Amino acid sequence: MSLIDIDENELYPTEKLGPAVEGTILYKVGEQTHFKGAYITTNERMIMNVDMNGEPYKRVFSYQDIVQAIIDKDAMFIEFPEGMGKVAMIEITDGDAQEFVDYVNQKVQ
Image (cartoon, rainbow, N blue to C red):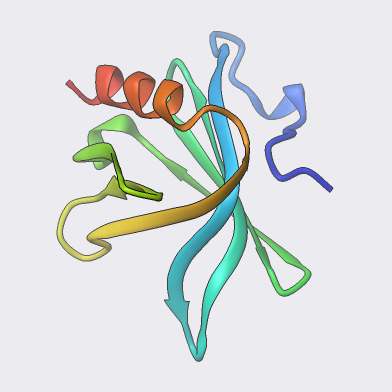
């Protein structure tokens, strides 16, 4: 099951899909820190899909809620304002991280 794939019916009529990446998101929830996840961009927002031990979790972010996206060594980071901080994605299995980072940074400016 690819977490990048979303139903076109979930998009606003004015939305167009942009770059997407799938890999392992590092975020602590209880004792677990590694989750299979994906970030999907559109011209209006970024969607995060995560497999939380077999349970789907989806969160939607406005580009106004993102500080920046960066690649540092073997990880891609999305930096959010205070509270969430930087969220890392490692072991990217689908998508182009550089294309994704460039697209997100263009949208947050």
